[in-house]
Structure formats: structure tokens, C-alpha cells
Length: 293
Image (cartoon, rainbow, N blue to C red; front, side):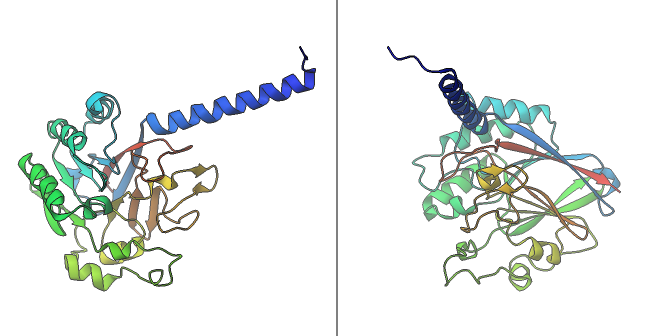
């Protein structure tokens, strides 16, 4: 039997270790849920909302973390949220049933009030299936923001919370000559939501982060989004690699972004989407704490 030389043994060892590291990271990036905390200070946050805690869940894609998502539920409970916001793609457009999402909702409603806005996967469902989901959420007391505003009251003070969705044509393909120049501008958001009261604190829930400039110009003080899954594969020092718009290293891949005094948080999401896996990119629960500046 042929024996390997010492350099050959070292080379084989390095290759094996590399494979083990890659496999371990793929497992971690697809199963270990992290919590990312953000503190948003703003003069328009009423004093009653100082330390108001918002938990953001996005892009679940009918995935389970433990039986009946007990891992997610445990982590969310520990965060003691005042409200929970769901920013779209809780299910997959090709799902045959929505039992995983329904079981998740059944447990969430016992933790805090829930606000929901659809993502592109919900929009891609046929009309009957989407109605089934919306009816179920309503039956559980979830506030479905269908291009509308609600007020969150605390001790006689309030903030505005909006839910925005728009035509799937604005989920553009930048490699397609017919769609790359499509843009969702201020005229379109005002047609859907009306003008924002810029004297009050406005929280906007929407799935797609691409149009941050529009959201900020319209008057969203804080926008919460998802959709990009953190770029699926994250490259150290560069950020997310992929975008649904079919460009590399998208501008708004994940994390906190700011234009003047307007903020946007892009959640990395929980599921894996159509690509099927994540790398260097843990599933994420967002915790946003409002501060009265």
C-alpha cells in the first residue's frame, strides 16, 4: 500500500479541514437564528414611546426552526416586544398549504400585537389562497396593513404605522431592457398612501427596500423591509452577493441605512428563498428600540 509523503498528508489534511469548515458554515448559516438590535433616536418619537420595542420578522418562507418553530417563539418571547411586525414572504408562492405559518401565528398572537404586510410571494398567490391567508390573520386579530395607516397609541400619544405594497412590475429585473428603467417614485407612493404627516413619527412597513429614496422623501422616518435575504451569500467586507434584481452586491442588502434623518432597516430574513441556501448569513430576527431624542 502506497504511503503518502508528509507534504501530501498536510495537503489532504488542509483540504479536509476546508471542507469541514464550509459544511459547518452552511449548517450554521441555515439553522442558527441570530438577533440584531437597532436603536433609533428621533425627535419625533413621543416620550411615551421611549424604549418602545419592535420585533421584525421577514421572509420566513414557511421554514421551521424546531418543532412548530419553538426556537423562534422562544427567542421572540425573550425580546419582550411591544409589537411584532411581519414584512412579507411568510409563505412560498408554491406552497400547497400554509400550516407552518398558521402555527407560527397562533403562538405569536399571545406575545404582542402583530402587524402584517404582504411580500411578493404572497402577491404571487392566486386570489383565493391570498384571501385565505388574510382571512386567517384577521380571525387571529392580526392587523393586516393593506396600503393603509394605523395609529399606535400610548398614554394619549401615538405614532403612525403604514403598510405599503405595490405592483410586482416594480420588482424589476435590471438585465431586462423593458423593466430596468421602471421606478417607484414619490408620485406613486402618494397615490397609494396619500401624503405623510411629516410632523409625526411615521413607521413604514414594506417588503422591497430598493426604493428607500422614495420612502424617505415621502416622509417615512423609519422603514422596515426584507426581500433580499441579506444577499444570500455574504462576502466579508463587501456585503450581500445576490439581488432579486439580478445585480451583484445590491446597495440595500441588509442592516441599517440612513438618508438625512430617515432610517431604513433591511432584515436578512429567516428562510432561504428560491436559491435554497445561505452562506455566512445567519437567519435573523430584528429588534428595533425607539428612543425619544
